[in-house]
Amino acid sequence: MDETEFWEIVDSTRAAAGGDPEDHADLLVERLVRLDPDSVLDFARHFESRYNRAYTWELWGAAAVLLNGASDDAFDFFRCWLIGQGREVFEGAVHDPEHLAELLDDFDEEIDGDGEELGYAADEAYEQLTGAQPPDLGIPEQPAEPEGTVLDLEDEAALAEHFPRLWERFGG
Image 1 (tube, rainbow, N blue to C red):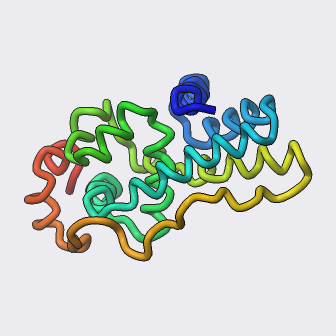
Image 2: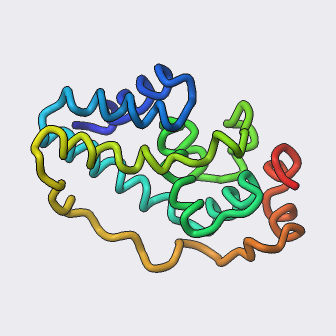
C-alpha cells in the first residue's frame, strides 16, 4: 500500500462517517477487513509513522488550545484524530500547527480531537482477518520526549502568544 492509497482509505471512511470519529473508526475497520492481512499491516505502518511524526511540542500546544488542555492521553488521541482529518490537514498541522486555524472549519471539543478508536482500527481489522495480534510493525518507536522546544501547556497566556491565530479562533 502506498501513501496515496492510505490517505484515500482515511478520506473515504471519514467522509462516509460524516466527521464522527467513532463512526469513522468503525467504517475504517470495515474497509480494512476487505484487504489482505499484509495490506492491513501496511496501513498500520503508515498510520503509526504519521502518529510518531506528530509527536511534537508544537502540536501538543495546538491540541492544548483546541481541547482547553491536553493530557498525555488526550494528545495521543488528538494525533489519531489529526491523521483521520486527512492528508491536507495532517501535513499542514505538522508543518505549522497554527495552520489549523485555517484548515479546520470548526472544532467541537465534545466530538472533535479524540480519535482514540482510529488508532486501533488496523489492529482490530488484522485480528478479525487472522485471529491473531498484529506482529511488530518494524518501525522506530515513538521518542521518549516530543520533538522541538518544550512548551508550558498550562500557561494560557504563553499558548495565546505562541498560537495567536489558533487562540483567537478556538482558545480560551
